[in-house]
Structure formats: structure tokens, C-alpha cells
Image (cartoon, rainbow, N blue to C red; front, side, top):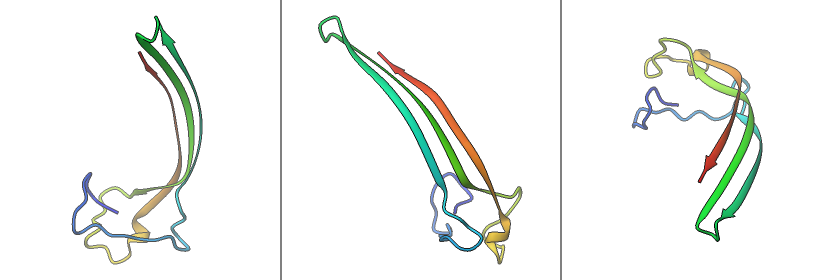
Length: 88
């Protein structure tokens, strides 16, 4: 667990416990690929949909370096991601 976007020596590693469940994701994706104009061009497209459970976030304003019980400073939730990727 880190307060920043990069790793640092003060990061805390916390395993699963009774309060912290593992993050889980299920993803469905499909794609299409085609060579065009005698292999001069390639077209590919893909769509995806991802469901996420037990996503972990920090409560607003928490300082992980000074709190004695990190598990009390976490929020848990669900998420989803979806999109279309096209390349020519």
C-alpha cells in the first residue's frame, strides 16, 4: 500500500485477512483482425468489459505512516471498466 503513485521504502505490504479480502476481477473481451490491401495495412478492433470486486481505496486524508491500524483506514467497493480499442 502506497500513498503515492510510485513505490518508496515506506510502502506497507498487507496480506489478506478477515477484514481485507482479495481483489477479484472478471473480464470478457472479443476482437477482430484483418489484413487490408495485400498486407499493406492491418486493422484490429477489440472490446472489453471488466467487473471488479473488493477494490481497495484509502479514506480521505489518511496518513499510512502514522496510523497504528491501517485496516481501519481503508474503503472497499466494486468497479467496472469497459472500452473499445481500434488500431490501423
